[in-house]
Amino acid sequence: MGYLLYNGKLVTGEGIKEAAIFIDGEKISRIIPADKLEDGFPKNHTEYETIDLNGKLVFAGGIDAHVHFREPGLTHKADIGTESLAAVKGGITSFIDMPNTKPATVTASALAEKLALAEGRAFANYGFHIGATNDNFREIETILETGKDGITGKDFGGIKVFMGSSTGNMLVDDDETLRKIFGIKEKEILVHCEDEETVRENFRKAEEEFGDAIPFERHPAIRSRKACILSSIKALETAIELGTRLHLLHISTREEAEMVRAAKLSSVNITAETSANYLWFTDQEYHRLGAMMKCNPAIKTPEDRQALRQALRDGVIDTAGSDHAPHMKEEKDRKYPVCPSGVPSIQQSLQVLLTVADEEDIPLSRIASAFSEKAADIFGIKDRGYLKEGYYADLAIVDMDAVQTVTSEGLAYKCGWSPYENETLKGVVTDVFVNGQRVVKDSVQASMKPFGQRLVFEK
Ligand SMILES: [Zn+2]
Image (cartoon, rainbow, N blue to C red; front, side, top):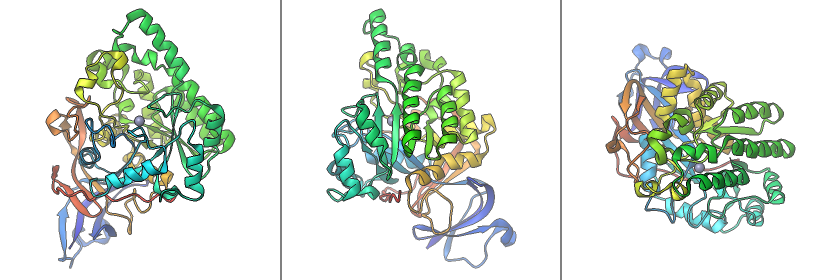
């Protein structure tokens, strides 16, 4: 038996339309506009379980191309099972995980291992990025040319480059290597931009002044806007020169938004991401949240936040990845120099987008685009990311009239906390479908079975 969802408002990049959705098996089989239905209800469909959506919004389930689920090697913080469930509760039905795990995902065999780890355990559909280092270019080239250890270009999302911000051994600071990676045409190159030299110099100054008691308010001065801008200029210039398919990750400054706006005039292959964290918090909150909002790049000023919100509205920012990066509370309690960067956020990402859209009068079509459609386009994800007949029935249903104050009890994260606690957000995710299965019903987990499937990347 399938499902028939009616009285819903379908939100896509093209706008909002009232329609009924039929789900047969794993797929959306039919979408019928409400004006083609008598009394808004399709007749003679007793074989379907009918759900009256009462005017709620229907989004294609989110595709989050920027998560850190910490598996393998760091599973005391999080794992694929716990965090993919948090994702689904927040309306995100597909994720692509970053390579800075232990071991780092910088070889075909490490990628194969991750794919095997996720099988049968992910509540959302799963995929992985591969990481670039100063010395694995040959490995990546082999994967793309001939395949290796069962891994080809279709088996991973994109190639992640930490440009001047070392996480584990994944720092590409060799210019010749960087140009070789940017020369790859087959895959998307995802870049974390912060200039390492600038960061190191700023840190040295802060240490001189405070020793190990550096206040967390200092974070945006250490991981400074200059560090972001310098590195983003280099990435954008190189990408324009070489025609790279560049996805600039988590931009955090007004200047970067303006640079992306300009760069897009020179290259259609340049896209940008920001995360809920930069759209929501500002540096005015370091005194309150301190380590809890320490992430890289740092959260910047209210003016930066306003520029990023504007860039989301304009489509200069293409996607909203959560950059979900959990750490345990005990780890966050450490002093600044040894306190890890990263914030758990995936369950609140859609609600933040919806609240920001409401505050700034951003059309919901823009949110649908940034939440799922653009990521599907950029990574060539097969049959997902859109509300379309023949596509997988991955759906996030939202009551836009409801508001929710985030509490720690409501969080599904293994680490059990989030800087969004006590924030009141607009739009409550009531129902979620993953591959045609109703995994969340009336905001409660309705199935203990992980229905996530492996994503297929056609680009
Ligand atoms: Zn990240």
